[in-house]
Image 1 (cartoon, one colour):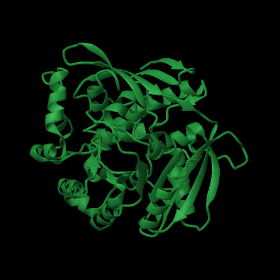
Image 2 (image 1 turned 60 degrees about the horizontal axis):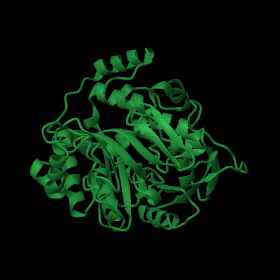
Image 3 (image 1 turned 180 degrees about the vertical axis):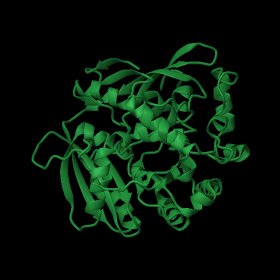
Image 4 (image 1 turned 120 degrees about the vertical axis):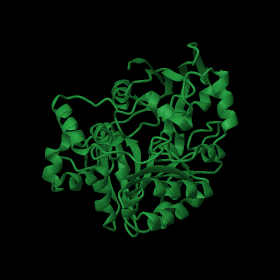
Length: 418
């Protein structure tokens, strides 16, 4: 979990796989640099970001974090250590994205860096329908002046497009989102979406990069009714230690209640995004929904969700609850997996996958994957990707036992082993 080197001349960082985004940013910012793509949760690790195939609001320009790497140190299934790059053992260099440790174990990452700034000049554009939001989002990502872009749909008639540009000036109000007294970031977007004027502010760079940490986007709102606690600014302030993403994910695992929620990200070709959003509205009616544009892969990252032949992808983040999810969590997820296949969308494997094995390999290139695993001695050492991500049925919950465990570990300042 060490940052080995920050090279300011050639603009790269060498980081071990277990370095968190927070540690990575704190180190590179001391040299006036940041990675082009930084995950929005500070506890996501460098190795996890590569293996998982991850994106953020700069991905319309840079793709996934894996598209900004230069080299990996990888331990193979037979114990050999290799150094792979786009020029040397390129098949595993590109192919390891989205494989979740089933091809080899990444131990060191060489990652590109770009010049940082003190702030992100953030603009909020109120929009109405999903169609209006998507059109403005497509227009904004053509603007070479911006560095970040995303959209949030709050319901069928209220939404917002949010853009950001690295900036050092202080001519605008400065707003933070990491203190207990701050609003959750999405609340600012919701406030603007309810009006008719563009709003601008400066956000300190760390606050912007980890703007969704408090409340885990907006999923923290679902905690209050579960615990029968009133939802207001005071309770959010008092319960702030429980509402960072690491603690919320700890809780989700400790209570084993993840199937109470529909929690999925789908990378969808931009030309099919409205179809997907219409299907989501009719099947689930869950809002808010996150829209994040991402450049598709141009290399063979065949298990990565952005390995789709199109000009631009939109990551559609759907995280919430509805009656259909309560009644039949497996069935509603299977419906979305089938629909995604029809419109060439792909899901991220961090979430539940319910594909039968034969159906899974009808989507992904099993011949390529098996060949890569055989070449790099993974077959007898690591489980394959379907075995690792497949969910077979409904979970048994451990609610109050989990609540007690999370509470006691929070008092001790511990993270659960998840």
